[in-house]
Length: 242
Length: 217
Image (spheres, chains in turn brown, blue):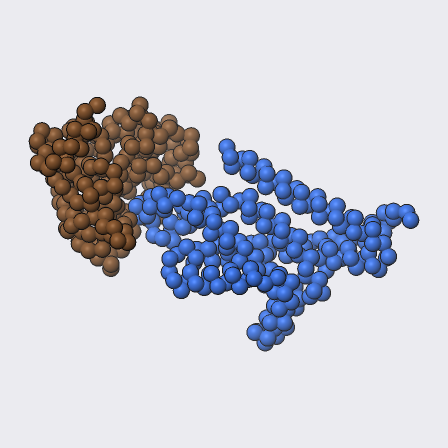
């Protein structure tokens, strides 16, 4: 489904991604973790071409993202993305947030888009908030609307960029619950997160990154029981110890 | 010397014509200038070098010239360019629109810059093209953020319309001046003009303040 093949990326002289490769199968959930500044976010932003790569190749569902002749909007419309800071459109209600790109990108009718939007808001438990503007919603609610907005495009895969990092602790679980359900329904997901409980619950594999390199890719139980790299051990001991 | 109200009352129709011309110039230059200015701001933020350079050159060019010179200039230049006279009204409209576009473009550019990278990414990630992303995500937010400044600029523009006297157009200020001199009633007319300008511009400022208050919420 998603193939990342030896990509490299520089910001000026600084290399943020060093020869990263990762294959994600259809229906698989992969958690990417690692210390901040390790390149995790940059890596998943490369998957839908929000960040261009300097070398290497990425394909999603047969489309070559890194090929300059690929029409990126077309690719992106099929890959859902959820951001750390939600990024709902502040000038539109929750419902309109879900409708805009269904209408403008997928050319669905207003009626159809609205029906789908209501369906998805219901699914994330926010049916009664449809007409509210984002600033009237809590962080957890905003993030659930953002997930629903991505799902409204019927994506073949979902990317999550630290979806719970900006949330107050009491709101994290409501967002994770939606994500767990999505994973159980067979959505292909790459999730950058520090939520190790989530990783244990639904991820088939865990990717550990540090210094712009993928240090380790391991099946979830193996990663938590006996990570092979020293850095992963150190990282785990730091975030699991309390 | 007595304050003569009658001279103002007698001149009202004439003054009103002047005021309407001022409003007309302001409205056209604002709409046209905002449209062209937005286009320039989009060019400037597009990252495409020829467009960026064109927009930069345009803005710096018009901002380096006094408006009165631009008005004068278009009065002579436009007929030369199109081969027939266009009259002072149209040349003034063109001059104002092009001149205001430079200022509106800077306002819109600041507005676009205030839209976060995250918002832009969110639009792109959902499959919007660059143009759609600007149209549906960035510009509505930019205009909202800049609304008070845009109205303030319109107030300045309204005051600047008095400069059209150089091409023999009669805006409100010029009309007042004409009556003042003709009737020898400078104090009455210039006081009246001041009051009218003050009321209109003050109302505009109040509107800006109420906009700002509403946006803080």
